[in-house]
Image (cartoon, rainbow, N blue to C red; front, top):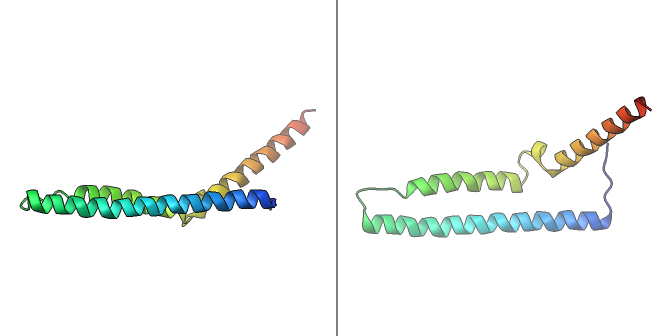
Length: 101
């Protein structure tokens, strides 16, 4: 079941993808600069007690998952999958409706 998109739909999808990529790079940039700042604060104020790795680790996990989603590393859970599943369910509903009429 292939989906044919109009030029307007293709443009909208491409624009949305670019916005998602831009959002990821914003998140990554914030992650880098904020964590450099936190490392500096930690090493300056309490070098004997290192805590900077906690926000680095947890935020880093979030950045990795954000990147996996944006760059569709697991396409089975992307927008295309959602749209195909919706169409499949709509077709199934149409078939079931026809059986009872």
